Image 1 (cartoon, rainbow, N blue to C red):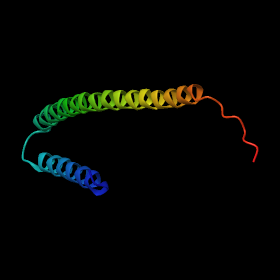
Image 2 (cartoon, rainbow, N blue to C red):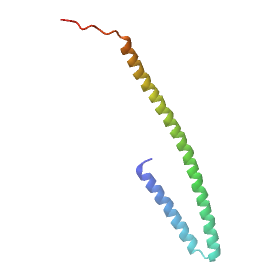
Image 3 (cartoon, rainbow, N blue to C red):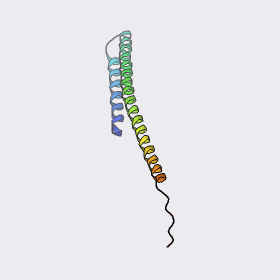
Length: 100
């Protein structure tokens, strides 16, 4: 996600919340009705945010697990390559220095 997308989304959500709040405050309703409506809208927003956080955690945990398995696989390959190089060096007989 590009860097500016997060700022844009934040601004969009913040602007929508401000507009909704102003619309509710300027409607010809009683104070009690407005408070009830604000409470319901706040609860809906809280539930929506909790759902979004839950979905984000699920997708992130899958990515973390995938990253861990890739790191372990790379580490295993690296150790395997290092071990095979050491084994090859041990198997080669030492050459006697030639006197030229």
